[in-house]
Amino acid sequence: MTADVSYDRLDDDDYPAYTMGRAAEMIGTTQSFLRAIGEARLITPLRSEGGHRRYSRYQLRIAARARELVDQGTPIEAACRIIVLEDQLEEAQRINAEYRRAAEAAEAANPPAAA
Image (cartoon, rainbow, N blue to C red; front, side):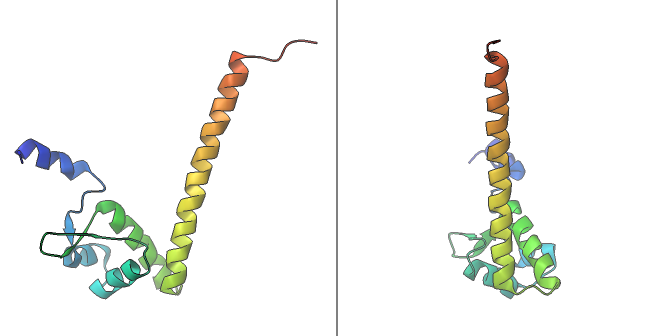
């Protein structure tokens, strides 16, 4: 691997750059919390060649959101479900906005005929 390729990964939100210990430290939680949200299938860390869990920045943002909810008293299973639903809602809103823009563009390109 060349140095240029490895540096490109520094900007990749999905690159599994963080060990479990470092990930837990970064979001201010325990390794057992990361294991628990993994067991709840909120995030699935990649494994190194040695079998160690590795987390991406994207996964750390999700884990931090779960930690927020748990810190507010939400059970971990419910926190995981809330995050999944929030993600689904955000995606649906994005798709709706795309459809709206496409419909507006089509209408502007083909205005209704005057009666």
